[in-house]
Amino acid sequence: LTAGRIDAAFQDEVAASEGFLKQPVGKDYKFGGPSVKDEKLFGVGTGMGLRKEDNELREALNKAFAEMRADGTYEKLAKKYFDF
Image 1 (cartoon, rainbow, N blue to C red):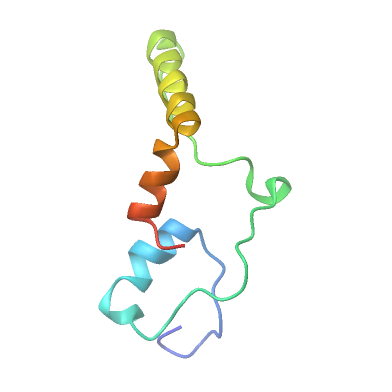
Image 2 (cartoon, rainbow, N blue to C red):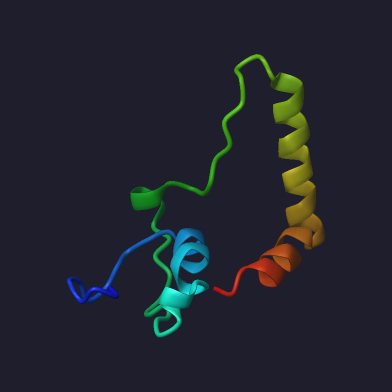
């Protein structure tokens, strides 16, 4: 974008925001258009890798994430740290 070789970029929101828009080089740019969240193209979200045998950790993480979504903590944190 800054070199003028492309007019637009299609990128993950977090990577674009933190890696470009919030940097000095991205000061003259912003997100344009609606977010694209088509599960057929991008899946259902971000994943985390664990060892296959880490069943207890996986269950604890799944429980914690479910509780955070249910009580509004997830939304509160997303609004605090992400501006999109």
